[in-house]
Image: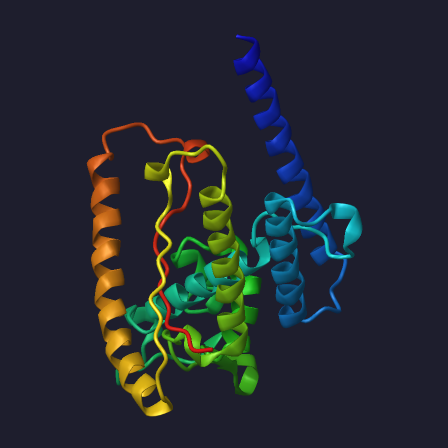
Length: 261
C-alpha cells in the first residue's frame, strides 16, 4: 500500500507541475503580444527540446535560459484553429445562403445577421472563436478583406507545406511527440515488448536518385498513413460502447516523413 500511495503522490505531483508549466507558458505568450507567431513557435520548440533533455537527465532547469515546455501548446492550438478556419470556409462555399446566383461564395460582412462571417462561425459551432478564426483566415490566405469592409472568399483548402509558419508549427508538434517516444523507449528496466515504434531506413543517394525515391515514397507514405488512420478510427469505433473519459484518453498516431542530410 505504501508503494502504491507513493506512486500516486508522485503522479499527482507530476500532473500539478505539468499544469503549472503550461499555465506559465500560456501567460508568457499572453504578456508578449509583440512577439510574432514564428518567434512564439521558435520559443516553444526550444522549450520542448529542453524538456526532453531534462527527461533524459542531460540538462538541468537552472542551467538554461530556455523555459522547459512539456507540450507544444501554442503550435497545437495554431494547427487546430487553422483546421477550424478551413471548416468554416468549407461551409461558406457550400451553404446556399452564402452563395450568389452563379453558385460562387458571396462577399460577406464580418458581423451581423446571416450571411456574415460571425454568423458563419456560429453555424459551424464556433461562435465564440470568430475573432481569431477571422485573423487566421486573412493571415493564411483563405479570405481577404475587400471593399466596403466585406470578406472575399479565396479557398477552404491550403496545404500545410505551402506556408512556412504552419510547417514550423507542425515541426514543433512532431519534435515534441518524437521526444516523448524516445524518452519512453529509453526507460531502463522496461520490457522490450512495450517499446513504441521507432524505425529509420537510410541509404546514400545522388540528388537525381533521391528525387525519384522522394516521389515514390511520398505516394507510399500517403497510402500508409491513410490505412493507419482507418485502423485507428476502427479501434475507436470498437470501443464506442465503453464510457470514455477525456482524462483517460490521449492523442496517439503515426508520423512519417522523408529526410535528406
